[in-house]
Image 1: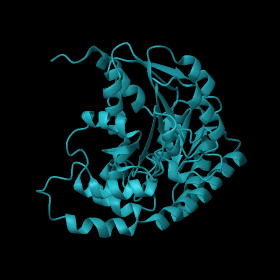
Image 2: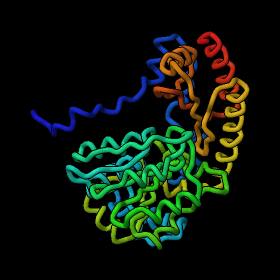
Image 3: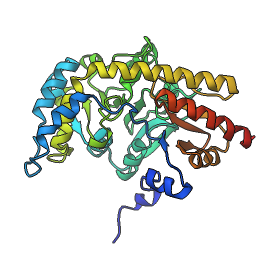
Length: 357
């Protein structure tokens, strides 16, 4: 059976080996997964309370409009209910946006080292991908402006950027948005929004009132700790959300996911605690990198990107010691764990790194 020819350019997402497999392979009692940017503190107790009564209704379809969650989230964000689109994680929203906008011969503009799904779905739709190199781990906005042409349909800004954790500050981002042609969609992917602590980060949702070509995406997978339930959302002008809904599958978010997200929104004290602990861990790991002479990017997410040669070999050695990290061609991304685990990681990394040298 023949599929689209552009599929030959792609590779399917390959998840890392399971914790159970690694334990068995290396005969380890404990594995610490620091590769997927999951919240080490789990989720709010309000989530468990919210979903408990829905365990016994698996025969009932979910609310396709997710109205209870929609009402709660619109109040939380101070937007209209019609401005919100839900997806099975932001991944599905990326797919919907790409499917709705891109035709063969179109192109997208993105950073060269950023979230992989932007390019993946562009290629599926037959579009070209213009990759603009990061500068010191940060989006090169002037370079991205230069890359836009008459066939550009989408510009993707991952902010904070995955995997570098860096941000584009408010002033530079606003100036960039003003210069992008109004017929080019700007997607501001803010999956790690809740973890940002710097004052120079932009509150972008209010910009939607001024710029009709902005979409802001966020998720419940990271700080809210609901990665297993797969639910994220987009905010934009209601006219555009209405169009995107045509690309959304019916019942695309489960009842459990909707109810869990509804409960998670009520747990803002839990989020504040997680952000505070993440900031301490982030500073600890970045300080360690400076002490070791290892370059790391200034992160505003729940991970730190450590620039290293032979990153793949290093990640395998860490795995053998019970720590799973995400390897990239020129570095590793380490999710910030609880403090005791981070202290253990630093000790193990120091030994592995010295042997590597």
